Image (cartoon, rainbow over all chains, first blue to last red; front, top):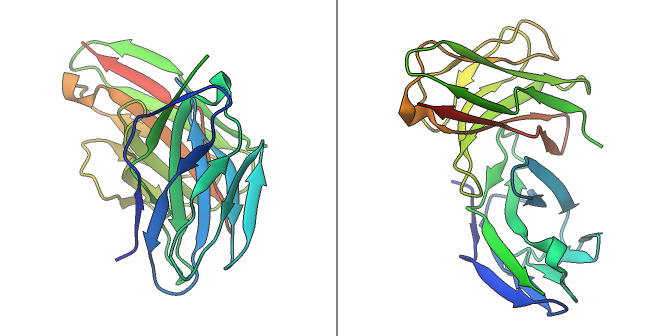
Length: 113
Length: 110
């Protein structure tokens, strides 16, 4: 079945460091791909998305490129801030008529000043 | 900006009490979902709905029940709360593409 695998956390970085959070998926066809962010005590917020191969989603300095050949959607940011400390979830929505969005287990990011 | 609301945001209750967690959305979405999540951890789908008068159990077994009498409203009820129900409950809705989440209800059962 469809699944999402993302790197285990926690990831700890210093402010202004480069961030990569790896995400790979298994799905039939061309699913839509998403990154969500969850700040402490809140629900998930959509960070960015991509709906077809080679699309790049971007928002608030974060980017992710839909790579069909490697079935990946890695999240990157060039310079993290303390305020980026949160849990990041990679997700896919199958394009085969599936009802559910499939979420990864989440990766916690700590950014130190 | 997603318009999906959950009340209460925090709830502390005693064992055996009946509770209802409210979820409302103003986007006209047919599909709605309830997830259970220990804070910052993996999401577990416990209920979903295709539309009015449609409800289904999710991947994680739950003693809670849901109803969908109106498109915008998807409440979750626990008839008799227990300490094992202590968790965060997230409601979500989806139109054609993107799933949007409410802010969550943090439940503590003593």
